[in-house]
Figure 1 (tube, rainbow, N blue to C red):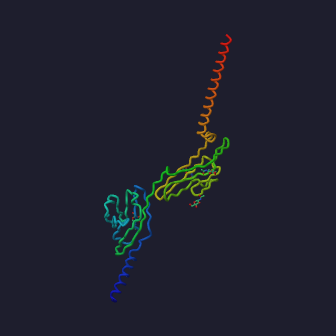
Figure 2 (cartoon, rainbow, N blue to C red; figure 1 turned 90 degrees about the vertical axis):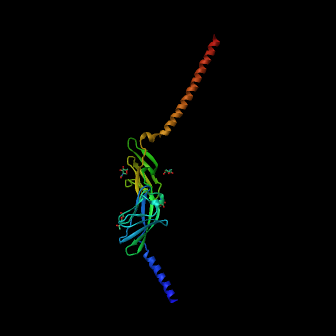
Figure 3 (cartoon, helix red, strand yellow; figure 1 turned 120 degrees about the vertical axis):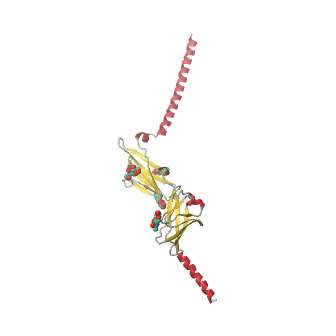
Length: 260
Ligand SMILES: *[C@@H]1O[C@H](CO)[C@@H](O)[C@H](O)[C@H]1NC(C)=O
Ligand SMILES: *[C@@H]1O[C@H](CO)[C@@H](O)[C@H](O)[C@H]1NC(C)=O
Ligand SMILES: *[C@@H]1O[C@H](CO)[C@@H](O)[C@H](O)[C@H]1NC(C)=O
Ligand SMILES: *[C@@H]1O[C@H](CO)[C@@H](O)[C@H](O)[C@H]1NC(C)=O
């Protein structure tokens, strides 16, 4: 009975030992990647490594060993994995299915083991087309002088982990709140651009501020409408005048007929 108690104690002790051995190698490592691109899950353990088991969603899909070829255990990954000389794993042709938490068991030469977590997250490669700039400005102009603008320029991008910045924010009369640039009497020739950055890419777009006299005096759309109205009025007047003239000559004819 005493022996039994001892063995229970012993197994609790071993279980504790096992937990303490199976500790984390280090804090979780976040790895950004681009869809269709590649990403390396880096091994940052400096002790002597025996083998590394790569697991996602309980699927042990590969094993790497420093300076040895990779052992791919799941056919689905064939042709998409390679091992760096230190045992780090590189995945290529990334798809959304590769995103997630990888639990990696690193076996050490000392027969200890530690667990490393990786979070692989895919991002869109940003282009300037992804950036939308909304202008709400009023143009004012001094005759002959340059025209100036007052109002807000807002920048927006759809996507996660995107930071937006405006350049030229040090010029006088500008002020930035979040993604909105407020300008007071800014010279129209100054360019303002919004830059979007995510962990894998960066893109910029410049705000185009329409500022020439023809545009400010009468927007193009109104010009055509005015012309249509003028044309319409002119036609109506022409028709009425022709009708009156015809009526007049007709009346004259009748009058002459009556006279003769
Ligand atoms: C192993 O290689 C990867 C990528 O080549 C690198 O990021 C990592 O720092 C290396 N680890 C060590 C411990 O040198
Ligand atoms: C544009 O700015 C004016 C004046 O600041 C404001 O009253 C108006 O609501 C704004 N319009 C939009 C669509 O943001
Ligand atoms: C702002 O960005 C635009 C476009 O990238 C550039 O032409 C302009 O010189 C920049 N202005 C400043 C003050 O950096
Ligand atoms: C700026 O962003 C913060 C946090 O996202 C928000 O609480 C605040 O209301 C925003 N300010 C304006 C003026 O939109």
